[in-house]
Image (tube, rainbow, N blue to C red; front, top):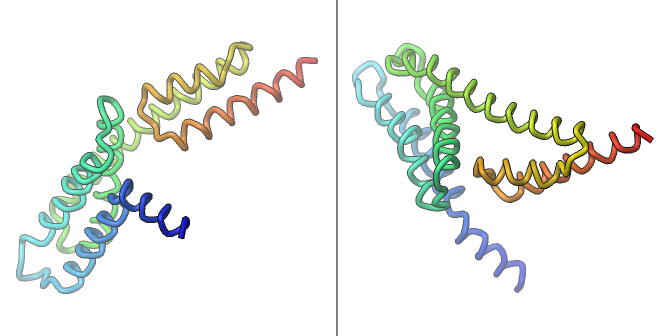
Length: 168
């Protein structure tokens, strides 16, 4: 009984996962049934679902603010371009040829943000400061989810202990 109640509570809090799966499944069915030679509306429809609708649904479910909204929206849009590239056949890809280079620029920006977080981690660990609190503050400012913050704090403590052990 408790497991079912916990699952229902999780599904109510994280309905985005099911909604995203249904959107992607619907786009896959549409892509399989579309006559790509006769229609020019298939690619824009799939792109609208994956680049606009998925980030909007994510926002409605989790309501991130500020930097987290921008980072998560950008990451979901990049994923949407990637998925659309697999759903739309190559000869029918017209908009995707323009969006693919932009996706790589956005992925590079996201990786730069992650690299900045790793640099904060390394500086805190090597500098001997309280790495866990510095990393946690930066991760919260960047809007990372709670599970990712816990993992980063654990990693910061691990590296700090290893460096402290090596210094002895």
